[in-house]
Image (cartoon, rainbow, N blue to C red; front, top):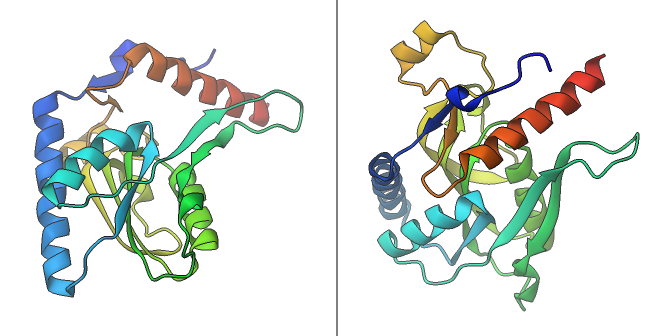
Length: 207
């Protein structure tokens, strides 16, 4: 396969660096909360990547309620089937008052193109039309930092170059991680398999 990735293309983030990113996020979100005099009603972690961040922020920001959702990139087969995120869990359906003006913090581990996050946010807005949605991720691709639809404000801890839009020199100048990130709780071999599966699908689409 052309451009097949190997373990050397991945950066294994240590827990210490993850904690620094969480502290940075927590500080910035706390300042935003104070300045805008708001509070979050609950956190919506996008599992699995956003689960750990949601727990960290739930403690530092004193947010008790968590309603997880889960999506997984898959290619289910068939000529018309895309390699895309599919929904596995959406626990917000249990909320009784769908028209309350909830302040919601959505969390994700790694944000590259943002397709999964946007899918999640779209469904939240459809189910809870009066909600105000905020979004935080540990990592975010430098080329995909534009604000998503339906969010009020967004934060990220570190910048990456997973879309490979920047040269190494630019990454050095901008303090951007120029590898695929594997977070401390993730399995590098699983991430390697997923990245290569995505590349195989997209290479086949362009042939």
